[in-house]
Image (cartoon, rainbow, N blue to C red; front, side):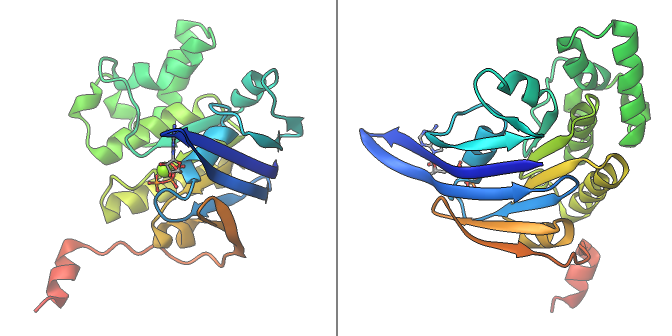
Amino acid sequence: MIELNGITKYFITNKEKVLVLDDINLMIEKKDIFGLVGPTGSGKSTLLRILTGFMSPDSGSIVIQDKQLTPTTKYAIVRETSMIFQHFNLLSNLTVLENVALPLKLRKVSKLERLQKAKEVLGFVGLENFSNEFIRTLSGGQKQRVAIARAIITQPQIIFCDEPTSALDEKTTFEILSLLKKINEEFHTTIILVSHDISVIKSMCNKIAILENGRIENIITNKISEFKPISYLEAFNHAE
Ligand SMILES: Nc1ncnc2c1ncn2[C@@H]1O[C@H](COP(=O)(O)OP(=O)(O)OP(=O)(O)O)[C@@H](O)[C@H]1O
Ligand SMILES: [Mg+2]
């Protein structure tokens, strides 16, 4: 469970103080796939940065998994979360297996155990045969699968996704969304999904918050619809 009360954030640019998040109040339940939508610059990524402890709000309070997020509790809370990015944020000088095992290395898990666990989660995302490949040899969809494997290796309660499919084509988007849904269903992971693609949000999220100019304009309970990727062939068949 995540609860945000009265979150505000200012940025100082050119000696001007700009209000980027304005009194954000949100309640996200366990097992929600919660969508955050809004135009460029509306504050979506800033809100995620605050939720992941990378940035502090200027005022307001955050409760994650019954714990108040403060400078002293944030390290323990962040351990229960993972993050997935638009551009994958993988390390190109490491193999697929080493990338996936990295969070456990940082937690000082033994090499044997972390490589075994990494193989297991690579199987879950369908990349069991790619362990020894380097990241540069993979397609975008495969890179995002590696990033998802890395995200789930620590068995997080919450996964934050910032535009996870915005660099991918429609078919790959569908595959990555299906994988995120499977994680939500099998592990009851709460997913916070930021996207500017309404069809992605509508096919994934049970609740949607619309952010505009740093304010929540609306919170919608969504009836999940099917995400339908259109193949190039279909698209061109309709073209004159
Ligand atoms: N570190 C920073 N310093 C100053 N201003 C910032 C900083 N980060 C973001 N901003 C500004 O804050 C506002 C919100 O940015 P944010 O990145 O949260 O938007 P967003 O909704 O994620 O946009 P996008 O859809 O383009 O990713 C923007 O006006 C942006 O220019
Ligand atoms: Mg953003």
